[in-house]
Image (cartoon, rainbow over all chains, first blue to last red; front, side, top):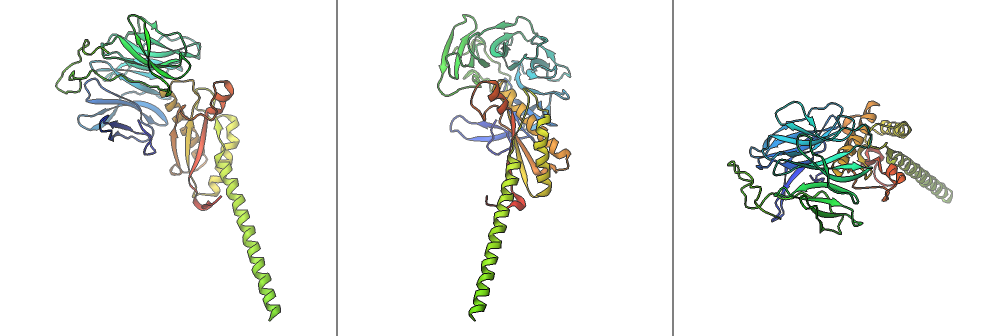
Length: 238
Length: 153
């Protein structure tokens, strides 16, 4: 997402040589884009009646923005695809608190997967579906401070993974074991990597108020081919 | 001859004085209009409703926008740092849209506004306390076309 032409739109940037082009520009603000695992589609948030709803866009045909969420008077954003590309998890305030929902792209209803508590300060955001499919990472407020959690796509097995400082916007490694996230745990904004199995945490990038990390797909895995090649969960170990 | 020169000089002097006076008046009016348009409005935590204390501010803008139909505005929505970065971009957009809708409900045409959200990226006060957060939850106004107000000031 970039503001470079005034009205925020979704751009695609070649990392080398660094050129970029507009992918989608709907009226209003286009934000929180994500690629589908096979690279053929994009999901993103866009403005509808002054609110935000989620749309998909067909990259292989370069056309057809399709609206996938319908929640009057509320907002849906920050989509993330399941590994098979058939479902999305996303963020919505439709229950009066910010929660994570899961939805079949073709279905009309969405399932709540984060616990509903009668407390105004509930704020679960930034979901990322693991490449292995069995867990979702997100951040949720604990006493007003964001911490990293994981939960199964059916809402079971909620686990809090961080305690120290503000910890936000997790993104899974292709191995489904490591998570990169932004944290203020040592005073300034930095990116940290967490090994979900051992619980070990190490600093990755610091010093530049780094945030909103997103781990790349596995290299050389055929992930971006459109011939049905799937992701090898043991592919590249970071 | 000399008397006529003196009269002409006086007239020229008088005209210059009147022009200066007129320019001062225009400058004061420009400043008044721009300061009314620049007044920020603030929001409650995680809300995009127009607060009662924001209405007088917005009503002053309505009056100015009616008086100067050539003026266009960009409404910028901003948030405090507490929500998620992504959520705040959407929330800022709602704040900007709420302001636009309010002004439109008093008859100002849609084409005179654009809206944008900067989420939590551009805090007014760079601190982490209630006072700073309250200041940072705001809509700002940028004049994109001065219309009949013209340049200067």
